[in-house]
Every structure is written in C-alpha cells, then in structure tokens.
Amino acid sequence: MATIKIPRDDRTITDFEDVVAFLAAQGIEHERWTPTRDVPEDASAETVLEAYAPQVNALKARGGYVTADVIDVKADTPNLDAMLAKFSREHWHDEDEVRFIIEGRGLFHVNANDGVFVLEVGRGDLIRVPRGTHHWFDLCAEKRIRAIRLFQDPSGWTPHYTDSGVDRGFQPLCFGPAYVGPMVQPHA
Ligand SMILES: [Fe+2]
Image (cartoon, rainbow, N blue to C red):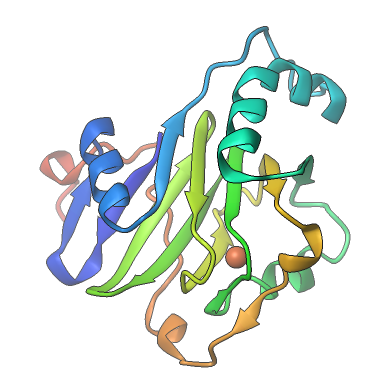
C-alpha cells in the first residue's frame, strides 16, 4: 500500500484516505486496483493486461493514454544498474508517469513546491504523476518491480534531467516489510 514520508517534517502517512488527499494536493492521483481474476506471479503480460482491462481502459479514456505495456524488473535483469541509474537522478517527462504495481515495490522522490516527499508504492497501487513533475525513482532492496505502464506517446517518456543535485541529499530507503510505524520502532 502506498505510503508517504515527508523528511523535513519527520512525518509518515500510511492511512489510504490521507495518502490520497496528500497526493491529490500535489496533483498526483492514487488508486488501489483489484484484478478481475487471479493473476499468478508468472502470468504473461497479456494475462496481466486482461485482468486489469476495465481499470486500464477507464484510465486510458480519462487521460488520453493510447498504449499500455508491462515492465518486469528483477534483481538478475541484465544491465539493471544502468537501467535504474537513468531514473534515480532528478528528472521530468513530457507526459504523465502512470504506473500500476503488480509485484514488488518502488520509491518515488517527488520535488514538490514545498519540498521533497517520498512515496513508496507496492502491489495494487496505481500512481499517476503529471507531466513536468520533478521526481526520481529507485527500487527497494529486493530489486523487484512488475508494473503496467500507460503512455500518451511512448516517445514522450524520456527523462529530462534537472541536474539540480537535490537527489543527492536523500537516501533511497524503503520502509521495508517490517515497517509498522514510528510507535513501535525498536530503540536504537
Ligand atoms: Fe520518471
């Protein structure tokens, strides 16, 4: 489930409605999707797209997206580090970044008007980051993500780097499966 961390305020948001409201204020859309049928972990891209067809089609109509595909990244994916390095520096795109997470997790840092916040996404999370938003993306320790991507025009989804250096001030730390909130953190 999507979780927000705001480092400057030492604040974490985990409640679904609160996460949706926080992101909406930043122009980012977040939904939870449930498949129309069971999707086994080894399901083909076709099966995955079929299972989420109602949601994908509704979003295509709403956002003017013309194509959808499935990206599959694992720890042993060839050239993984080079691939990830393209997106772990602050950048923006000419079109929306739309991701629905089927498996695994990922971490978006978003450089919003009032500072950087961290958005961790996982299985079942849809995220729609508007074009022009300054952000960067990392995988979590297990280096696993499988996601549906939607495009208005695949050629528009090229990173434009800001070279601001803001990204260097943040460690890509995922909350981890054991993360249950600050109240029960073990003493250091
Ligand atoms: Fe991006």
